[in-house]
Image (cartoon, rainbow, N blue to C red; front, side, top):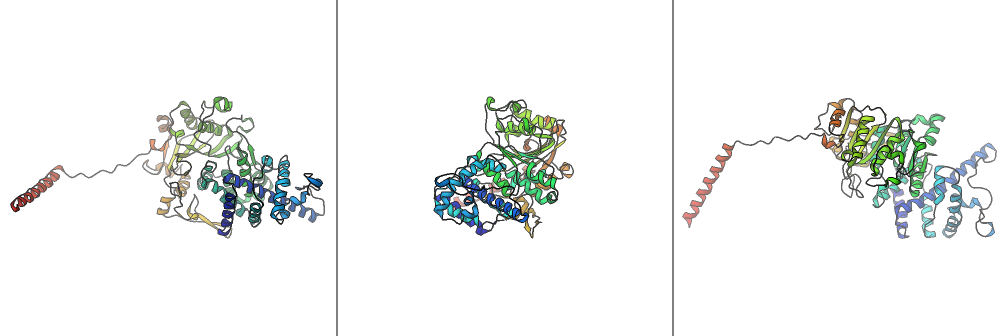
Length: 524
């Protein structure tokens, strides 16, 4: 966890950006991302130097070339002068000049080769307006212990949280505890190949990576599984250059060396190289959009003829998954009960052609303050041969936060999310919530009951918060997947007194009133 002191420093820099005229939180994070990338380059260069010195041989890979960069008078400046360790000690004016006139052109030329993150530096623009602000940001980043993966990961997550709090860019970020729930329920394994075709800041991929570190730490002991984790496991697509830069930096800071984070318009481009490739899809794709048929990938239109983006994404997930691959994806409620031919066909395919595992209905306030849309998480397995038997439903009514625009936490931080607990001496200590706390945070109950969906959960009545519905019932209901279609409500029988008793009471009251009126007339 980041400390209160570090959080205060970040807030101070954030405020300085705003005061300096940069009000868009995405731009703030992007600029900080560039500086973190510069620091990372210097650290990589230093490691190579140390290795060369230790082995008494030339450096295998120089991040910063020898010689001058050739920009400006006198042949420019030496590449060595662009290193973070040199920059941070320069005066604000000199630092500003070197970064704006030399470092950024170097970052853009570097993009021709190297990691996914370096590739996304092609469009790098330096927009920090003043030397004083640059110096302030560099001082902050210089104080952060970047050798600690958890600290730098949490730091970046804290900054990404500011995107959501700024409102207008909230669509780029799924609440972290909802991501954690989906990852916990799909339980990634060291052999998985994971994809998010609308990756944004890469929250799902980062969470999957953290889950594997926590639950399968031995995967780092063997070269093959370690290389798979760093180079072949994680795949994310987006068509926003800023998101690609931020997302790939998020992955890098969480210790994933070379993920496949690339530019791709998932709904418009054909998917030749990605068909049947992934064993796990985690996603929260954009809702409520429409595309012209001409602008939509033909291979998706072949699955379902529609202009609606949420249905096209469902078709895409089925396309990307290999047989046996599983998915956990967030959809607007309309996907579950929409009456159009395309809506019904997607649901029929999930139930009849593949294996629909479960539906978790989310509270409508989960995406506030920037969207009040009602949503659900759909869990399914691609089989191409059916397999749906009983579908598990859960009606989540509380996620640990208030469901208004403020989204205030209802419980302490360690009691939020699907696995309540905290780290102590490098180990995770689990906490058990009380009934009262579980009523405020249903997520641990969801994760627990999900594991019993093929056992005890099948015996639960449909009046309960979770229950199973046989495939035959779903087919008979026209493949409607809304929980309210199957949930049974218990009406409490009202106790009505016998009419004779009520009439007797009314006559007694009338008698009292008549006597009272008689006494009043006598007094007058």
